[in-house]
Image (cartoon, rainbow, N blue to C red; front, side):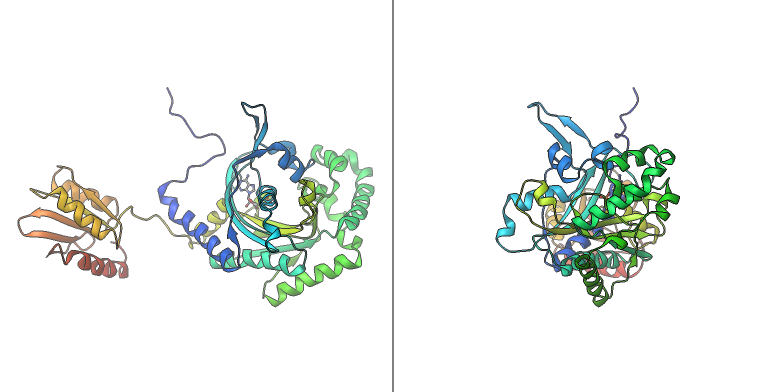
Length: 423
Ligand code: AMP
C-alpha cells in the first residue's frame, strides 16, 4: 500500500517554514491594526450563492474554479475562493456599518480554487487582506493601498511595482463595454475559446487574456470613456498616493472584470514572479457588491495579497526568517537525576525561554547529541556528581550552577550565544 499523499495542489506548512509564515502574518496584522483595521474571520465554506452573486458569472473563479458540494441537508456550499464577498456579508450582516463608518477590517484566511497547480498557483492558498466598508471617498482607496504598501515595505521586499488604473463608474463601463464589443466582434474567429466566451458574458475580462495579447494591445482604453466625475475621483486617489510618497505605474489595461467593481483597481507586481503569476496581489473599489448580496448600498475598497507568493519572494531575497530550533534549552536527567527536579526547573525557565526536558534513561552522550541535533544552545544536566551543570552546546564550555542561579545563568548564556552565531 503506498503512503497517502496530500491532495493535488495543496501544501503542508512544515515547522521549518513556520517562523517565516508567522512573521508574515504577524507583520500584516500589526501594520493593518496600526491603520485601525481589526481582525475578522469568516467560515471556510459559504452558500454557493454568495460567490455566484458576489464574484459573478463570466469570471474564472465562478465558472471554473469553485470547490462546490452539496451537504447532507441538500444545500449547495462552496469552499471560500476569495475574501471580499464573505467579509462584506459578515460586516453588513452584523450591521457593523451602523456603529461607525467606514468599517475597517483585516483578515488572513485560506482560499480554495480549482486551478491548474504550478509554481505560485495552488488549490489551497492563503491571502492576507483588508476591507474598508461603508464610505466612498478617494482617501480610502489610497488608504488601503498605503496599508498594503507599508506591509510589503516592512517585509523588506524590494522590486515592488504598484500598477493602478480606474474602471470609472457604471455608466463609463457601459460605454467602454460597448466599445470593447465593437472592437472584438469582428475579431471573434481569431479569439481563443475563453475570449469568445468572455465576449458574450464579460467583455472587460477580454483584457486579462495573455494568449490574445496582440488584440489587447490595440483594444480601446477605459481612460477614453471616463466621465468628468470619474476623472476627478482618480486624480484625487493619485494625489493621496503622491502625498503618502507611494510610487505607482498607470496601467490602462488593468481591469477587474466584475460588474460591481468601480473606480480604483490596482495590483502589486514583482519582477521575480514570472508570467501570469507575477502579481503578489491586488484590489480595488467595489461599490455595487453590497446590493448584489441583498444588503443596502455600502461602498467598499480592499486588497488581497497571496501569502505563498509573498513568502517566495521574501525567501528568495533572504529577508524571511529561516528555520528555528524547537527549544533553546534541553534539561537532561542523568545518573540519579530526578525527573521532578527537572520538571520544576523547566517550569521556572519557561518564563524566559523555550525548554524541552529529556527524562529518558538513555546514555548522556546520546542525550547531548540529540540536544545538539535539534538545535538547542544550552543543556542543563541534572544528577551529575558535581551538581547541576550548564553546558553550552556551541562552545562546549560548562559550569556548575545552583537551582537558584540557573535561570539567570541561562539568560546570560543565551544572550551571549545570540551575539555570536551558532557554530
Ligand atoms: P485574486 O483574488 O485572484 O486577485 O488573487 C490575489 C492574489 O492571491 C494573487 O495575486 C496571488 O498572490 C494569490 N493567489 C490567487 N490565486 C492563487 C493560487 N491559485 N495559488 C496561490 N496564490 C494565489
